[in-house]
Length: 455
Image (cartoon, rainbow, N blue to C red; front, side, top):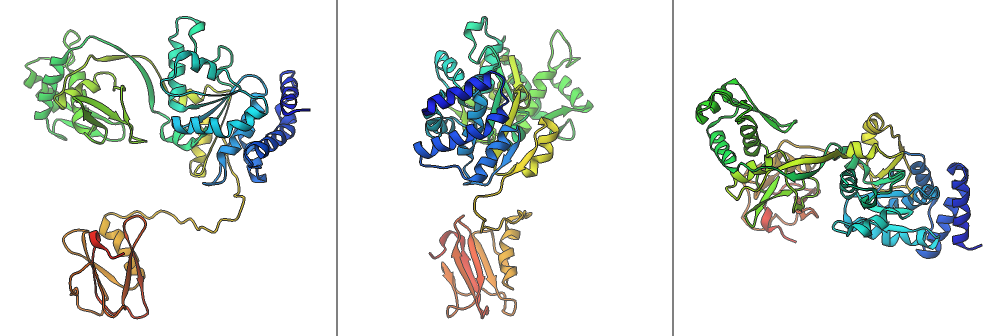
């Protein structure tokens, strides 16, 4: 019996009511054999364990290099047997395309259809991809396609499946998507009436307002709050009796101008290019062309940067990643750093975290992160371990390292100066810093200039 026939038999049994758990041994064995024949990669036993963890709706923590991408097709194949479709969710278009082309090969060899959804793809191609047995897609594309479907005028224009659009998902880098970006809103906007003059006037007003005197800044909630003195000052500057007048409201314009001033910093939250304000994704650092903040914030930033103020947008549809992924009947994920977020995964998503052991014993020793108040504190540590001291002269471009027994007097200037090859040894580190090590006789004084360290 060929591989396609074996898959067809499993599909018939799954769709006839046989529990997937009963089919798991045969399905996993079939995928492992298919991967061996097509890719030359045979799943290790620990990878099979990871596949079971995903099928059971858990978060599988697997270290870097343990083959999470290959593990995902085990659970994807098994859950696709029901005919309801499976989503494998990645963080960017490149990974979605790469995984569909690479580990999608064993699935195709076994008779499964594999689709990939990319940004900018025509609607008919997206529709076809979502109706494959296994679909590789980014979290943002999945979210926006869902929102567009909520606005579709007829079922024929839906991108996702009409029936059971959210059957089962395997989320790669699950801590990034379900924790770090959990509350990030996905918004589809429309154009509203534009009032550019108010944005410009509001920008002039907030320049005269002072932090802690007229308003406070809530960094956690990312919003500025006008206090009583600020309301009175703004009304005086505007020549208005009431900022909250429903016939002529000024409060939202002042608030947005304050937020633009204090919380949205140029070249960090956004850039100005070709006379346009462009959002920078806070997680990837990429410029998000065509995306705009809603509720007048983008216009406030345009007024702040003195560029053309474009029409204001109104929210037509919105959802957060947290709400989106709760729509799935069964959800799983994988990452190398899930255990530290295990409590939040269980409380918010009812997902348990399973730590999958590595295939080979790790030789690397992972230590806790060390955080320092300033740069000089960080540079002192290796010297202290060597029984030496460090002195900062000017800035970090000129560090003087010396032995306690010696006078605090650097020797002659140079790239790295030393005394008879003894004392403190110094070499460039891979991250651009310096590696320090004490020799048997740390008695000399070293002068190190960071922008000209000897190779």
